[in-house]
Amino acid sequence: MANIKRFEDIKAWQKSRELVKEIYYITNNKKFMKDWSLKEQVRRAAVSIISNIAEGFSRQTDKEFIQFLYIAKGSASEIQSHLYLSLDLGYLSKEEFKKVYIETEEISKMISGFIRYLKDSKNV
Image (tube, rainbow, N blue to C red; front, side, top):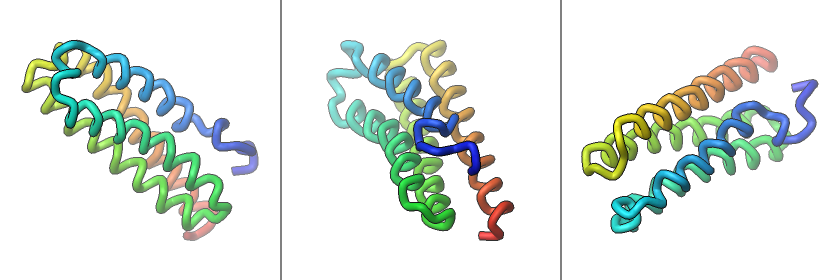
């Protein structure tokens, strides 16, 4: 992590920040707004990714950072599950679903790669 001085330098955090904006945008439509519970759950899951990356980074140990990265990865899967439900209920178009699903998948892969890097570099 020699080049990473702040959590804002982490590419997965940067992409997650974009994802949060996208999630808030797509959940702001009339159909989604009526389902307050699902709307809030998918928003919380998106915020969880960015928050856990930042919090884990600030813990100053790779072991704890990895733990928080796993939580962030779990939140990405939660979003993907909510996206299926949102598509099935007609809250999202197929295009919206595909775009956000792919973005979430990319973030999940970035997090997995970062976990592998941390484990390999420190034998955690």
